[in-house]
Amino acid sequence: MKCLNKNCDADEIETDDNFCYKCGYRTTKGFTFLNNKENVDIILNGNAAKKDNRFNALISLVFITFIIFFVFCIVRGNDLFKPFFYLKRQLDGLLYGYNVSIIKTNNTYNKLIISDIDDAKEIIKKDMNEQNWKCSNDIETLKYQNGIENKFSIITVNYCDIPSDIAKEATKVINEMYALFPTIGGALTNISITNAKTNSEYIARFEPRYQFVNYSQDINKYNKVNKTQILLNSYYFLNEKLMKNSITDIVKDNWYVKDATWESTIAHEIGHYISFFINLKENGLDNIILVTKENEEKINRVVQEYENGNFAKQLISEALENYNINYEEELNLEEFALTISKYASVKDESGAIIYDETIAEAIHDYYLHGEDCEKSSYEIIKIIKSKL
Amino acid sequence: MKKCYNCNGNNRSSDKYCRNCGYLLKNDSHYTLINLGIILTSILLLFVISLFAISYFIN
Image (cartoon, each protein chain N blue to C red):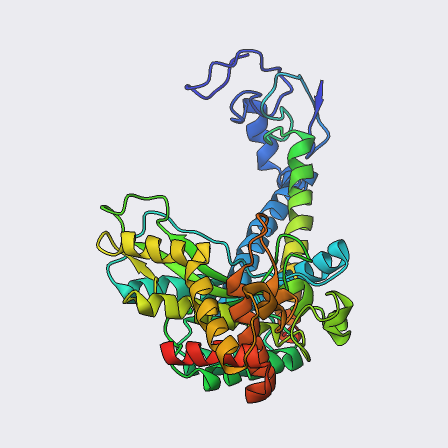
């Protein structure tokens, strides 16, 4: 038998079929079948009909879930996702056996149009602001962080997840350093917690130039942005238990200057920054944040000069000369550096003293002991102060 | 042979509609997917609500 639907070509309909197997159109028998209300009720209350209602329920549930999620996003903003990062921190803690930072300080950006110094500062700030919401909102820590950021014109300070008492000590060091050397503001772009490549790599570290934006681009097409930063190793600064032990537990005796603490190593790093800052100043630069085709060569030269240590050696030689005259001594450069600390006379792979470490340790000594620091440190400080 | 999920009527395996009740003959997996969808969406809804509540307790 053929289907009653003119558009259907089904021709295998049996005489007792109620509907066409191909298009679902009722047959002659189906017409009678549908006239019986009981049959219609059976169809409408069948298993599949009930399941189809569940499909409608699924659609409604998806819709409601989406609306609720959207409303929660509006109400809580980024804070809605904080539990994820809390969980990530806990898992990382379990995985590594110590707390690690959620902040990335090695982001780079490419092909960005940077017109002026304000654009450059804005992108440095934005990079950190976009990560800050992942950190815990410890009001005390945030207070210290924002305090030094505003006070010393450092573009961003990121104490993310640092316990407040450690943040307090770190802030104290920074405050005192800027009080001892009030004219050093403007070139340091970041102070931030970071994950070092290895735990023992450093406690804190000064990085004179981190090529941040457009570093691989042609300077004729894109201006570049550098960061000058002090990085705090999360292995120490996020693990309070570790920092409760003395710093001499991890470094050799007399490695740093006398009375050095975990936090005072920041003074050492600011010492490197001061040395770099003087180098910039003597070359007529305020900072190396914005690199244009006009100043690229000069910036490269100044950074190179700082890194090869000639400037530091010259400064130390001058201080040594004054020291030997003032105290009637005949020390050489190595002996002079050793009077400060072992770290002050540390050598590179070629066996040459790293004079920038001598300067940083002298400043570290001056931070800890003021004018009662080693006489050698003070000779270095006198020259530094005259150059600032 | 294909059994109608709605009325249990017998149909040929090539049929698209049930010869007895006219219902579109769907695979069993279709209904399994709906059930699974409802379970997963309910879990998602509970998860979103929990996330919202927990976010107030995490600093």
